[in-house]
Amino acid sequence: MTNLCVITPQNRRWKIIASLFLSGFFFANGCKTSGDAAAAATQLTATAKSLTDYYSALDTILAETDQLNAVQEVMYGIPYDAQTKAEIADTKAEIQKRAALAKGLTDLAQSFAKLTGSTAATDASASAAKLKTEVESLKLTKNKMSSYEQNLMKTSIDLVVTAIQEHKEREAAHGISQFTKALDDFFTKEAPDYVSFDKDYVVISTSLAKTLLQKGQTDPSGFFKVALDPYGLTPEVTDPTLRSGIEKLAEAQVDQKAKALQDSQQSATDDMEKSLKQMSDRIDLVANEKPMEARMPPVTVANVEKWASQFSTSATPATKPSSPSPTVQNQ
Image (cartoon, rainbow, N blue to C red; front, side, top):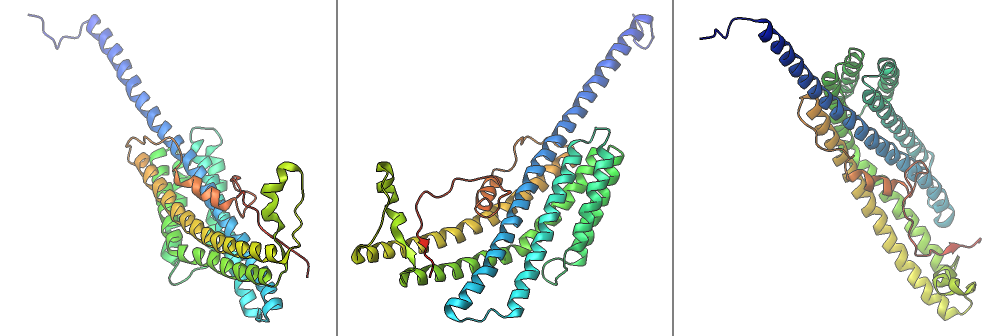
C-alpha cells in the first residue's frame, strides 16, 4: 500500500499547484473586500456632498431670513435689533463651518477610495489635517457637541490617516465608520435647530407675502400665463373683481407652498440622518470583513439634493414648480 506521507516529485508538484490555487483564491477574496471598500467610499462621497448641499441651503435660508427681518421692520415697524442680527450672523457662520466639515469628509472619502494608489497616503494626510481643523473650529455647546464628541471625531481621523498610510483598509474603514457615526449623532442633535431655521423663514416670508397681496402690491397676472402663453398673449389684469378673486387664489397658494416648504425641509433633514446612519453601517461591514451588497448611495440622498437645490446653486438641480407665483410690484 502506498504511504500517503511520502513526498514524491509528483506529489511535490501537485502541492505547489494547490498552493498557487489557494493563494489565488485568497487574493481574489482580498480584492472583493477592496471592491467593497471602494464602493463604500464612493457612496460616502455622494452622501457627504449631499450634506454639504444641505448646509449650503441652510446658509442661504439664514441669509434670506436676515433680509426678511429687514423688510419686516419697514413694513410692520418690528425692530430688527442688533442682537437678533448678530445671532443670525453667528448661526450662519457656524453653518458654514459645518458645510466645510462635510466637504472635508468628501475629500477624505475620496482618499479612501484611492487606497491602493500611490498618492493615497499623501492625499489622506492633507484632507484629514484639513478635516481635523474644521472639527476643532466647531463651537462647543452643552446640548449639541461636547468635547467628548469632538475628540471622538479627531481620534477617528487620526486612525484613518494611519491606516491609509499603512494600506490597511479594514482599520481605515473602522475609523471612517466611527467618524460618520459621530457626525450622524451630532447632526441628529442639531436637527431640530435646522428645522427651526426654515420655520422662521417660512413664517416671516408668508406674512410678508400675504400683506403685499392684501395691500394690492403684487401683480397676479402670472396666474393667467398658463392660458395665454400658447397663443402668444400677455395677461394684464385691470378688472377689480377679477383681481380680488385671483389675489385670494394667490393667498391660498402662499399657504400651500409654505406648508410644502416646511414639510420638505423636515423630510430632507430626516433623510440626511438616515443617509449618514446607513453609510456608517455599510462602512462598518467593510471594517468587519462582511460583504457589503449595496452598490449605490442611500436612496434618501436624492430627496436631500432635491430639497437643497431650491436654495443652493451647488446642489443637483431639481424640477421647479410649474405653478406661477405673483410678482411683487414696486411700491
